[in-house]
Image (cartoon, rainbow, N blue to C red):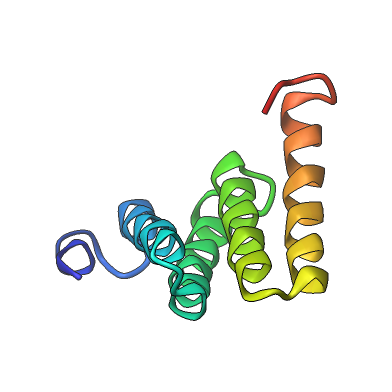
Length: 97
């Protein structure tokens, strides 16, 4: 992608591009490709922002959406669970997100 050329392949903005691609692919029903793009985003977010960052949690949540769309409820629950742990720790149990 152009972002990779401008920012580098390990930059947060590159991760945001992968993240958005994953969301669009999920919306189109292309869950396998959505997971691949979201995994790229997740790897960068975990490295640059940390495993407990909200962007990491959002990415895990959308990966859960991908797996749910594919009918893989076990993988979906694993990813939703990881996202929930981060969100609860960062935002508190009563946060509407």
